[in-house]
Length: 268
Length: 311
Image (cartoon, rainbow over all chains, first blue to last red; front, side, top):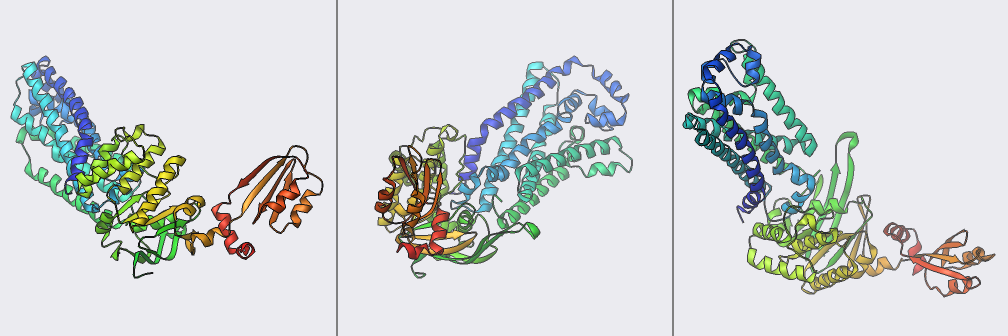
């Protein structure tokens, strides 16, 4: 029956989604509640005194005015600082699409049923994408709760934009993980390659941000994290070409995974 | 055979790895299994049994050759084939965090006929004395295998493909399993059962294929294979082995490979026991142990001339 794998994945994943979502939203809530404790003008001056590399490492670009605001404080304190933490959840979910089930042997049982390999991958991909979206929704609820509880003056629409922009980013990371796992076959190898991919991307983004206006800036353009910049989103709202880029690349990686998985041995 | 065969394999080969690390796991296998037959697929570990089964299920792809099940190509028509077969893997792995009931419902929903399948699954679970309300991680290995059997059989498939199904099951459940296989045969359904346990194959199979080093060495009726059967006999005397006993034993036509070690005598025995009992009665026999030959020994005996000796 179409949708049965999708429903099963949601049934088996909702608890992890809630745990991750609640944990991350608690972090966000804490950052939002702390906003009134800081003098944002003084924060702006403090940021001006930092060298570009340090600013880049905490996720701040050249647009310091944006960051010397309540929204900017949340952008630095939560979204900028947590980029690598956000990446963990979609990596875990991406590994579950094929690698974990192949490694444990349950994929043999699943694929011995009347179901195409492509259907298994598509339904699992969609279910885990929904799960990533669920985590993001919970993060937003935590931030919004912080605004209410702390009586913080924040543009909740912009806050929502920064938060929901995470969905295409997380789906992209999940798609990249799935693709690597489909090619690498071995779970441990796939996990190692994915971890290296995320960390190298983070480093390239940091270098690119620190070297804005120089030739080295182009290095950062290679990193997918460059296209999720909380400061830029706060200043400009949704950057649709970046979102489209994440969606298109995720689609391409899904198609490449389907192509490869259809043609290779399972569990070898 | 081919016209009414459920499984038809022609020149199927599988090579793993590439370059110097290449391993030939299955070499040009030709095999047919008829409808209503329980076919035993015998071979020692690493012979290529699981590779054959995984090829039939389209989990791995052949390096050469082809196969059909119900006349359908195992690659092009795998979904339709899977609708009509039940599979039990040798290294059964199920979703640890789910209960038996949840897994049964999941598998039934993928199969697309939840109501009827689940009802039959409940009947099978009851027959196998399996509590399906427990999570898989809380089940013993034997109960996990029972759940695997329920999943394989719950949709009453036309063909069951079972890879070493009874390892870890207690004797009573094994007996129930054998009865289930007899019922399958009576309904005209087909079973392809891999095993390295000769007694199991003897108990339920009609024909046996012997696989060794990736090559099918023989396909025979169970009776023919078991005609070459011999036993290893261990005799332990209370005191020392009686003088001249070894020479007396070696003179017996049914006895070979005699060796002594302290108070113990070990020999390979074919045929009637009476001549042996008369010879050893000269000493005080403390224990007499008879051991079934391994599959490999049966295989070697079958092809090294012992066949003629036993007939």
